[in-house]
Length: 248
Ligand SMILES: [Zn+2]
Image (cartoon, rainbow, N blue to C red; front, side, top):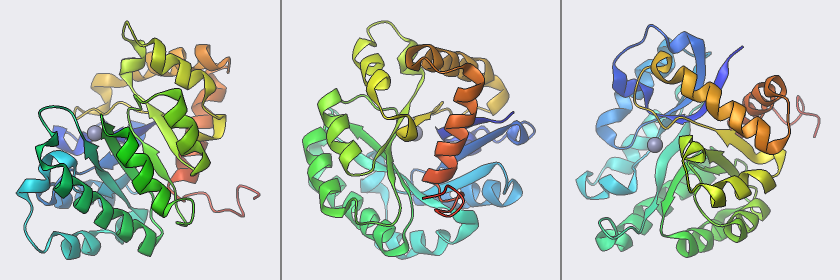
């Protein structure tokens, strides 16, 4: 049984020997990453779904032709766009206008090419909801908020736009009551689980099993059913299951 990992950076580990044990969405965060992500996606087409994007932390490092370069990568192996987003935390918010511009350009590319996106959002929930409302649900592909840490109200707004919500190991930390409540109430067809890891999959497999176990307890869903559910949600999110196959 594959453990589906909805958001990671496993290409950074440089280790390939255990990639075949997982199925994952593997993200780049800046143009310098994209070739490595592409190579991993091509080496493991059944296991690795490559996502290419400019993360809000790196918007000041890109050159003028970043967007055309991004579009050259996007036909690779049923790829998507990520990790992209907004970070309004105190250390990161000084270039918020630029973050918004780069984020919006990538959403325009996702709309144009009907591709799924993986979104990072910290302390910028109001802005992200208003930007996403401009695009969704009209885009013929979905977005997910990775390592979701917003409020239940924000989650409900984004559910209306067709959003998916991926929960990470932070679910298992103390003081995770708010995140647990969101997981409890997220619609089952919008739920994803992730490691956000840069290590090789064998090094965090046990933690993933604990995350799946915690989520299955909170949702009241049998653990094996949870494995199937997340694999299916991930496949629908990444358009690997077509609307006809999923019967809608
Ligand atoms: Zn990440």
